[in-house]
Amino acid sequence: MNPKYYLNIGDAEEEVHSRLWFKINSGEKFALLGPQVEFGKGQIVAAAGKVPQCCYYVLEGRVMAYEYTSATGDRYYNYNEEGSLLLESNILLQKAPPVSFVALSHVKAVAIRREELLAKMRSDPDLAEEIMMSLSFKFLAAMDQVREGTQCNVAWKVCNLLLTFAERYGVEYDGKILIKEKISQQMLANLLGVNRITMVRTVKELREENLIEQINGFYCIRDKAQMLEFMGESNAAPR
Image 1 (cartoon, rainbow, N blue to C red):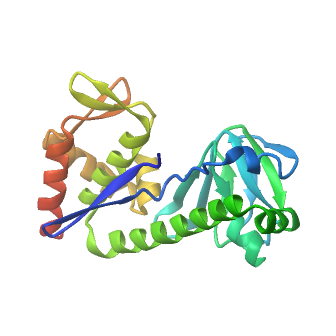
Image 2 (image 1 turned 90 degrees about the horizontal axis):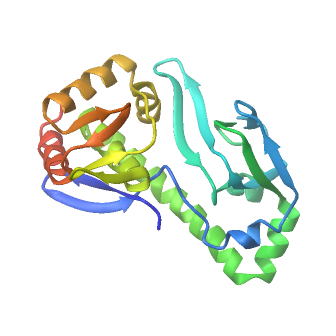
């Protein structure tokens, strides 16, 4: 199941997909479409502005889409972990990606060339449907990101991002939700496109509101319902 996050604008609440992760359901089919390749931690998988020769189905590890901006420094967009497909739109359209992709850990992946992908899409309707689902998810996630940027303040965005991580990495802990993934304030800032000073101030606010705490270096959401209520109230009064 793909994780979801909550978009609260005014009094309305709707559930939409997280833009951070998307997992292919029929991974075994993609795993047979090309040779296995490996990337070391920190290695560039695909460079911005250069048409890739392959798209990749991730078997192990994590690939991050990123770019550098003068306003906020490194800007992260989404994770590509086990079961993810990346660069499929660039391969199909033969267009260069606007951002780069880097391995955040040791990565094993299947390299799929355009000819093999197109041939399999023609012969296997289920695989073609998976490709359409992946592309549609990414399009809708990008639209949600635009809505966030124009309609939601930083406190809402940080809460929403923590809830997104909680959907994927959260475990029950003494009636709270412990996010079993080390997330730095710099990582949160990079994912949201805000500077570190703003992130430090916002995290401090959330602690003072008793919405979050840290346990052994892991973020913990003290009460999900209370956080959602805070998000609605916070976003009703833009800062």
